[in-house]
Image 1 (cartoon, rainbow, N blue to C red):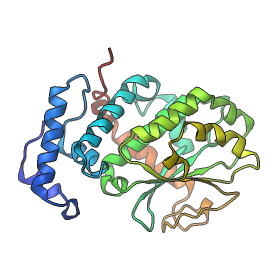
Image 2: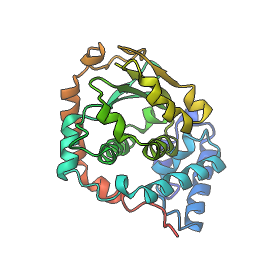
Image 3: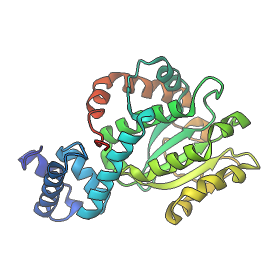
Length: 273
């Protein structure tokens, strides 16, 4: 539970509109979570305010997002249970850098690079790749909620992709992956596949089947480079920012330093019937 303290008032940005109205909306969400204990969501001001902002201050829409988000966390045990950064399978994927937050683009949205072929499909399961990626994403939402609330820009680097990577992504897993994008409060504003092989659209058509028309309209494919305007783009994408290797080291350390965060977060998931 949260209290309507001076600190919570300070966290309501001037761009949010009337601070008192926003605080009343957050209180509404808090009361709703208390009245619906089966959702078992995180009832802090920061969390509820984030869901409200990313729902354009529509309380009913925020409630639907909260319900969907915590239900996903309960159903996808393979992604959200036992999120210990020291697990060998997590350590390996952190070292490889499968999911790398970069920083804000020119529109102040959060840019992330998803390296779809950084892992070896013979050694690493796709579910563990998703698990590691969502561990980093959850931490990113905690560390930089302001930028994330404006939306996510994902560059999916397919450099080195092989048949084995494609075979890991069966239709059921693709459907769950796409559903998870829309279940998170921060919405993808751009999904740009780069270094894509010639026949990538045969593969991406399966993704498109499960996408909403809005998300489908935000998906683009490039043979090389990126259209994203970001000062911190990594060297591998033609920018002047940190390399993939340096970013991997940075985020591995951040995840390891926040082991307690995952223990706390793992308490919040819906109680399934």
